[in-house]
Image 1 (cartoon, rainbow, N blue to C red):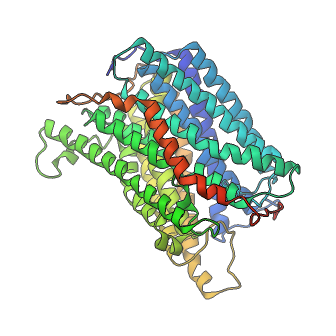
Image 2: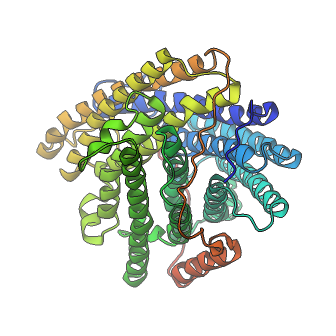
Length: 550
């Protein structure tokens, strides 16, 4: 792997990356405000003024945090690494595609946000039919997807150009992972694009009277579960490629890292039915098949855990650490660039265990549509992914802007990470417990006529509000740190790309035969979805008119 560091990051490439990163944090701030208000309302502490709806806030929070923040940050991060590892700068055509994608995503995102704020799209981030939003909300979301496709095409073009000009060479690990991540996104978003363009937009304009609800939900979850891995793969990239460099070690195995990403590409898409285990219109056989495929994702996740802790231990042994856990002592705990992602790694252990519970049919019956699921969601994307993205930010902005992280901002980053963890402990922990007690998700504050069970839930809802408030304080500190990073002293910060250990055998070249892996992914998707989707058409599927309940 070529690890030659440029003296300074390409300025035009940096402008594209920073545009994505800054818009991501703008969305994070707006989504955080909606989340704070939502949490205190759900806890019964506040009544919203001015006719603001609870579900309006819930929609804004989900769309801004889960879709806008993550997508913008991921694309910016991938473009930064592609610029460095796949040639030292982005090709002119790639930059044009990147800016075109950014423009479409921004127009679409702002249009969708406007519809939410005008209370014309309080349909949550899943936009489940038969709840009907303004057609302009769906058009905005479609533009976000199309814009992201253009950005993905730019990455593919940069990778293909590098391969042409470096024939016979193994591609840089970061570039390989970036391609795999965007391939997953391109394949997954086909489902939601079909749902929005073919079903929702004509229906919302009134061109069609009814909508096939089962089909629309299936198309959404075809996209909805791989969306989780679209969030996680860039976090894995940081854990695999960046963290070894930050701790002064080396990547444990280049081949294992690539294989884990290929397996995640294969098994992340054809598993959406485990989100629909309680849906009556899907055959139990096909639910079982997709649950079995879901558990295959555990394999690359365990491979990742093994690789990471092998990296930590070999690094510790090289520095003289002894004993079973002696390597822990030599890790850079006072460096926020390591500390924040490492805490994210630890949070992924209970988050992954919760995912196994959610995907298990009998246990899913207990927790389905309860706040347990919301708690799990916040452990994955709002803790593991968000903290890793925060850790990336502390070195990425200095690299892009030609600055150096100061001890003061580093300390503020450590404080922000701790505040975030405390807030998430209260909020996600309460969600998990009260979910087991039966408290439903996606509902505004209510005591259900002072029912004894609902009264029992109230202290947990208050704890959720406390956790949400602490999290919002951590979010404000993160926004402050982003601004502070852009004001740090001038200097050159190295883009921390790790090197692989010298292996006895080289990385197999078949791991880069994209045609084979894309073909296998398509075969698995067709196997998992063709017959169930065909069953969703017919006389029993009469469809539903639209409803506006707010």
